[in-house]
Length: 300
Length: 254
Image 1 (cartoon, rainbow over the protein chains, first blue to last red):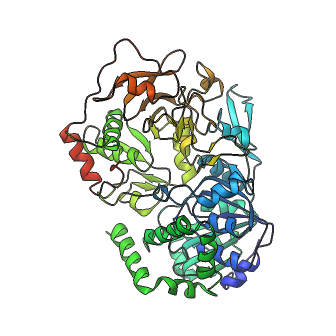
Image 2 (cartoon, rainbow over the protein chains, first blue to last red):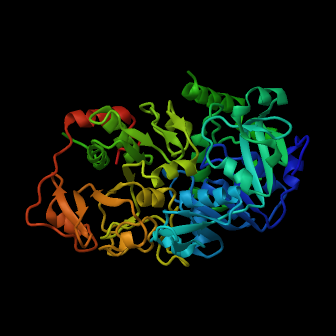
Image 3 (tube, rainbow over the protein chains, first blue to last red):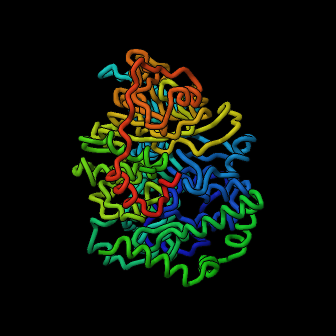
């Protein structure tokens, strides 16, 4: 287990991701997505990846668009209901260019939970009788105690977890506000854990409120301070998702086809060297506006 | 009283929640219906959302797009982990679960994964999300959808979320001990699932919907009893509540 100071730069943190890795992504849908870390994975040109996430938003589209991913392990792929079905998902899935492992939301959650517990599988009562059970590695058995039919959900041990949290100290002790999602299970299940934090705080503040520690530092390999590290996705209490940005992204794909995703990446990801440069493309006014909306929703 | 099909679905879904203690509700019509039920006949109803929110107080006009954002966590009693929220259902704490679907068949199986063969789909859809878990683990299930012939097929291309599977006892035999599919609510009528066959059966037709229309828009032989009552139309009071929750008609325009 790593110990000591884990604080590093975005570039150095992502250097420990390897080609061919299975990357588990924290957050859910468009909340607390580790976008800065994922964009750096793209900038550094990692390839032949598997990605898992409970509900995949448009970050999954990016990796498909540049051919960096061979398998998506998820329960749902899209952007959000108002933006319709993902065009690139259709292209890649309907032509057999991407492999999708279709779990239920709880099914994938139990895969991470089994990994977190260090056991090979967990019994459950979900996915039974459905075609999800047929197309995944799920097995069923008769319970030796009760005779009941149960689903066996295999553990998932990702190579790397990418997580975005509100606060961490330099040892990687993490605090999360709002929804915990599956991040703690993902951190325990994964071999390597890379965290971006909105703010690096002194160790003393962690020790003053140890009940707020959502992930202990001994699970974490690298931690990077990245304000607005999930933007334009949301971060509870700090900024609300910028849906107008999604509108523009999807409108470009509708008008110009899925090549527009590559154009987007050329501007926002490959065209920027740092997360600060990326945020400058949105502008200070947009960041402030989205932060005010978040405070209005979560303030007293 | 004029109303849109989505407003009708919302009002009828809210009526199904009367006397429930807990409801597992997704965004859109199920959430608006749950908020409506809580504001009217079932004030103690606990709304549970798959992102982790327990009993949120959603701000009218600030309805969420996803099941896991700040808007649907507003003033919640708890923000739990996602896996743990589903485990509440597996433990039997969720009375009611509500889902929609791209394709539905005569036994109430729902498909949101692919049209055509799974290995080479004609149309790849987003997938299950929590729908499979909700219908597998909540005690009573309500399906809500628009009534279109292309949706109502004899057999779904892919069982994302199990209804009565092949009918009869097949659901229970698969190990699904929870989840009796109680009703299917569409813009034409309310349907149940006949015992012992578990095939879709018309229970009431909505004002303005004819039996011919229901048969035409269903891609299989739905069971129609000799006497089919008329659904009580939404009242002006019910519609006023719905429109107060969604003043921009974000979900209920259609």
